[in-house]
Image 1 (cartoon, helix red, strand yellow):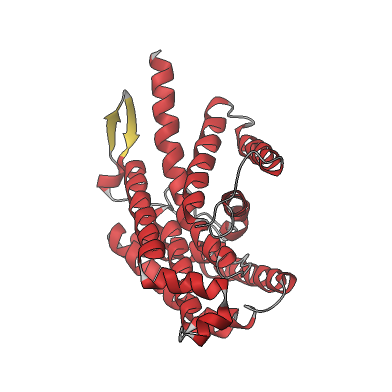
Image 2 (image 1 turned 90 degrees about the vertical axis):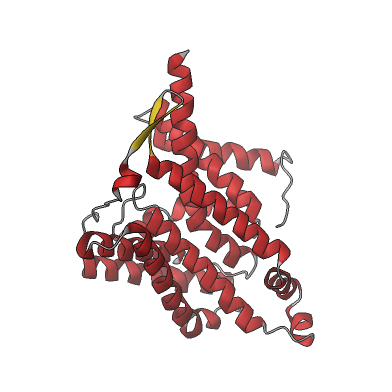
Length: 292
């Protein structure tokens, strides 16, 4: 019985924290694909860049972790604004194939650039002593960092829900997506709105890459390595469904953690089995998609 309780505690804490990092990284793509209809396969590059900035500041310049996370997020958000103006605005009305080809090319460029600037090895991850400490929770020693990720993820979920459901920004963005000509006719600056949404999504990805570098190692292939899991969240949650993305991310995190915990050799494949079963059930009408 004690083994069961300890196992459940481990899977719950580590699975939810892993799911929260996935959510922080993938929610930006949920926004751009679901609300703006832009297939941005280079989205993971923003998360990788955030993680690189954060690890560089912490390990090389001994910047406090929290300050490094804020700086990395802000820096990537500014960079993404420039990229949105220079590149992404040109593909908002392009076909999905053109969007895929361009953004996958950007991902190749990002991987090569990171490899050139930081080398091919995994970057060292150093946390503050407070986050590295362990505490006893339900008979299990749990790292404070994991609980911090769960808490920060919950705050972001609540903040995004409020932003999209209870502010004029969310209302104007939904109006622009539903009927762009009508939104422009009533005075909504759609181009500015899309820019803000893109920067928000990129900034969240950078934030996820920065706070999550203790779980998802930072390396040049990061944008490729985690693209699959990001796309799983986007596909399962329904495009633009923020609440669905949060739920699916946590489910994927728990399933993946449980698979690796109980089946260390084959556990990495469990989440893909979960994906296949989920999609089959949804195709057969087992789930109903809802929009945010």
